[in-house]
Length: 479
Image (tube, rainbow, N blue to C red; front, side, top):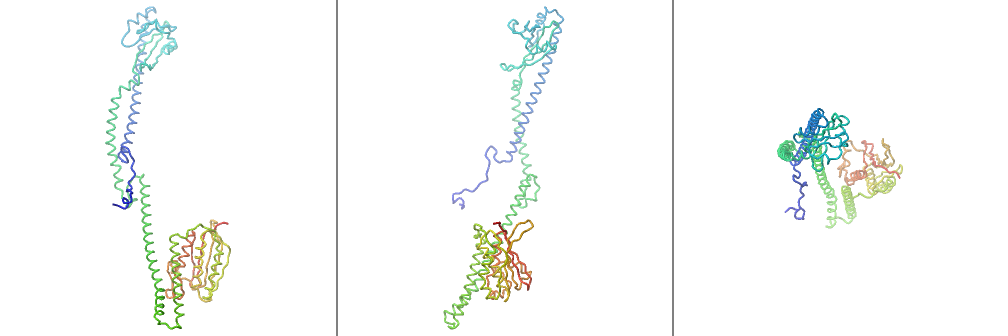
């Protein structure tokens, strides 16, 4: 059982959308094609059906109007008193004949008793016939669901002969075509299913062939390029992170080895001198000297441990605190005062000048960085040398203000080929003089980390025989 299962957590599964086809590409294509096909077929069917229906009805209306003219011609050839018998003789088919007088009264109707019918003067086809000689209209009966076509022609005596014919409505006409339409829709759905499968295979062929190890070197759809670029960016980022982790692991191993090496020497000295003193092999007059050596080595070891702990906290961002205003000038003055006695033992003079420059950060960390820079200048100087600390503001080309702290010495300087290495941990230019000068080899590395933690920089300029200047440059704030 996996660790995740043993803790009661099921492995995370890909999120899938429910439904008939889920996240299937072929299902999506089928649904899209089916919906599009059905919509087009429905629209085309309705449009064709309506066009055909109205074309037929238009022809029927014209035919009925022509038949009305024929009836009018025959009636005009007979006396008005003979119109009704004449109509009775020419009745044929399903056409309804109506004779309406000039004032709208119904004189004759082939299906209904004329005496029971109301006045027709307000009927549209009658009005049109009396005004222009002929009229044709269609009226829909909501009760019967049918359409009646009327065609009326004015006679020479002022009366109107009207013919009417009941036709099938559009809705009724469409209902007759439901079965063929449904069958065509079913056939279309089956065809779309087959076509969607073919389309899916063709669409997926380039996607299936994608080489994810080299995302940008694929012949793929333009729409897929952003995804492939994102995959490539993620792979590049992962490679960089893996390389960074590898470098960090290498640095950790190297750091551990260096710490072990640096501690081994003072431990050997302390252990050796202590063993000589314990076995009584040291003269009483030499005991204070041996005790002093043990004390000096233990002090060096304590300083080394403190520096190692400081670097470890910096690596783990343990120094991240609420930023507070820090006066660089005040920090520099305190450091110069603290290192005054050390400078005297080395016959080195100290000075501090400049202006009060304010930054925002961690004061203890800034003070430790300045302390290491000044101590480094004293330690690697020559007797009679000088170390100067200068603090002031500086503006860049965008008028952004920085606080600068420069620590300058007139020591032997650093060769150009060594300048890129001095910030490395445990690096010393003169290995043979390490015991003589002291120090842990971590001071400049701590100062560099402190600058980075304050979004600043630490740089150096040096000439052999003319000394070295370290410049701490940190963004400033307005008070």
